[in-house]
Image (cartoon, rainbow, N blue to C red):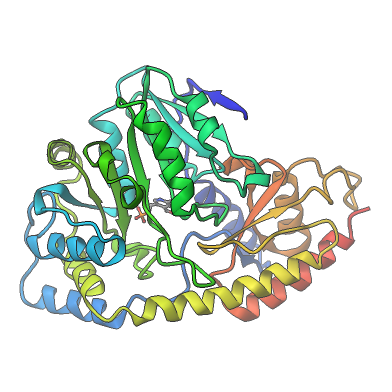
Length: 400
Ligand SMILES: Cc1ncc(COP(=O)(O)O)c(C=O)c1O
């Protein structure tokens, strides 16, 4: 296990956004680029959610709402947790935020002091570290071995906890690896946490519906209800319902902590958009069949991209159990030479080479704590996946 503690400010931009700038520069020069970097899905938002937003706007629901969300959306969120996880919460245990990003930042803002530590199993979504640092804390990265499916082992969690640990982040399913913790694996982590009552659990379930092959995403409170007084469970409509730009996320947690998070939210953004809240409530309470239908479409795209990339000399990837990201090992191309004589030495070099030589954008794994890997999204049109597979294979063949 590698534990790395960092004192950096952690204030960085989104790796995907930074890379998108390069893509846009190339496109402005007339190059065709297939973009596999996005954290967005290429599905439309559910039509009944869009209709609900239009109705809300027309009905004059255009005023500030309660800072922590409308009672209607809070009740829809309660219904979501009941249906998805069998968990019941009072309204006082729910906050609605401008995206789950804000809910997470709120939670850290009200609990983390300078010198406090936030344990982040890596590979991980890059933003947790910045959010912990923004609150004055130090991210503690605990690397999760590939031979354990990039998942945190209980012994490694035990080794990383100190008296300054305030939080452990448990993102299930995991961005960027697509790994899915089983209930038994979460239960083992919770056994460790029982011995450390000062550590809170931030359970981020944002990708909970993008799960394949008959699996189901479990959240820590389902296996360890006794940790309820120190667990904040996060989700949102962005990925499940393809409502990224509506900016609605939510958190369920102990009422006192939710009240503190509401105070911070009041001081930063106040309430989330009234129109988006109406849309999110409609998505959560409306027909849910689209979740399984979309997961099936994504699974087919996953299988296609996995096959194509495994056919490219030097690349290797396993089908992820969830999300819409593939973690691609570049071990077989690292050390090889490009036409200009330069050696490909890192995941960032691979992503640069694929962009320059093939017009394919994938994110360097280094941004997610996965050196030697790249992250490729398969939530793109099927024709793009075919085309990308062919061009990536050519670009790999061109390396000597
Ligand atoms: C793991 C994870 N959590 C949270 C978020 C934040 O999502 P949003 O603020 O759109 O709800 C993202 C976004 O990509 C993510 O990947």
